[in-house]
Length: 83
Image (tube, rainbow, N blue to C red; front, top):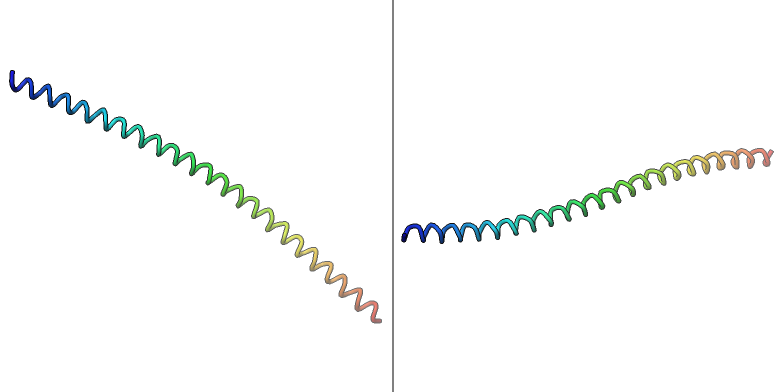
């Protein structure tokens, strides 16, 4: 009877520990899922910004090329006007 009582008490303690650990695990999983969601959102925003940056770099290069062509035309016109 005495050893049964200890076994029952041990069983109760183990059950309580498992309940607490299960609760803690569920909380940890919830935090992990929220962190993953935050990461995914930030990663998507970062990719969007990188795409935007690449598009703007392309536009800037096109503008530089246009400016260079216009400068060459202007230089040619200046030379022609001096003649």
